[in-house]
Amino acid sequence: MAQGKQLEDMEVWQAAEALVVEIHRLTREGTLAKDYGLSDQLQRSADVMGNIAAGYEQGGRHLAEGLMAAKGAAGRVRSLVHVAKELGHLPDQRRAELLERLTAIARQLGGFIRYLEKGPAPAAPSPDGRPGRPPAPRAEAADDPAEARRGFRG
Image: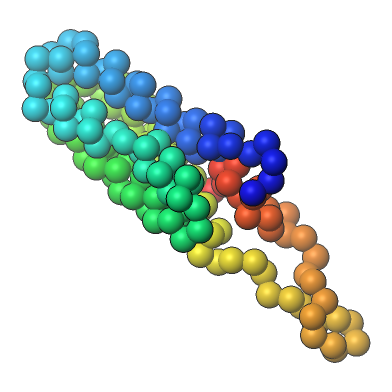
């Protein structure tokens, strides 16, 4: 890993942290604060950042596994946000904002997972047909896995 790159530098982890804080605030206000079961489920399901952190700290293949678990957690929270809306705990605007944030995080996680699964680009043949010449850098994603840990934007 490149020096200076830490979990807290990852954009997707930062977005997940903001989401967790938002969910905890949400579950402490209005009628949702009195729905202990749903509030508890929302808080526990919102561990998107914890899943990212666990995979990051374990490294290797565990990073992709942690990102997949985080994506699953984001999906659970999305489902519970719909339930909270249907039970009258969330106004339409707040629900829409949360769903937008959750969808953006899931998209980022999906892009990061695809990047990790894809691995480094294969070597392109040289102009004279000999194998082994490295390809030109790709603009759409970082080729350095340490750079990818920053938080891929998907």
